[in-house]
Image (cartoon, rainbow, N blue to C red; front, side, top):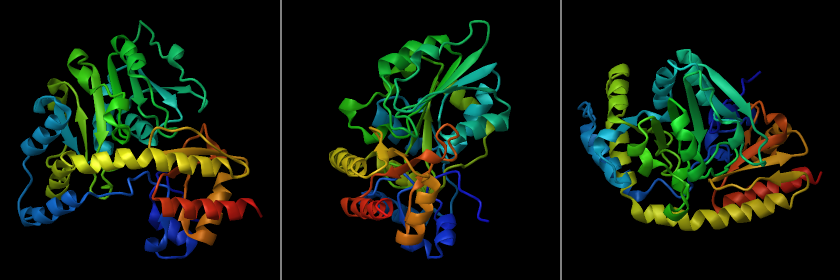
Length: 355
């Protein structure tokens, strides 16, 4: 019996299940930008090969300066990490001093992993996807030290939270972790980021990922934006050199890839809407509106059986939602890929659902 993956993009598991090479699979389970990596990033990685015989800069000065310039903040407010997973583990250690942390569920599973690993307490607030966001219940007990985790745009639904609503919550919490891993997929005029508000709220921690937007999940690179005092503490806690020289070079080139960013903002809305309409036209499928590069889809049949049939019959991998207990076997998630790939998915689903 093959153990089921808890994240998308587990091609090894899918290849074993489908009895085919991993390279022959069409992966809709990981929400990665199909336009990347940018050519400038690949060039930067190749140029960095000559640095493999040296340790990375332990302070990551160049990388921090590049990210700081990208967001118009001071470098002292930037801490690069080995993907969001490492930074979440550090955040869990900070939040462990609190009485509990509010978390609206369903939610990204690594929050629970990080908090459990550090002994931090989570207070889960169930939310029905597609309904209004439960702002009214996100009020901490005044007699407790409380934290809050928010994911914007929300994973797995793609719901975009209002910056104004989030700001109103900040003074009530000891610490607020705002995961903006998918915010890059919105054009600047539509983003609801709180990066510009960091100086006003020293209790705010923002996480960003470079792996999804720039198609670099294999390099594991993300960063935290927060008050320098907190980031200094995190640096003392963690292992040295968490970001390798190839990831460092790729990250610097990524945040400078302005043409690629504009290309993605032009491409994504149309392809997402086309895929939404096509899925909506299939019997038994109800996709939810999304502002990210993925769609959460409610299904009248078993999502697990649908996933398995797609693997066996079409070598297509979709993300089941069994790792989100609130969603269970009646939802699946798909990335927005190229027009050709999206059509291949829709055709395969149409054939399965019409039989």
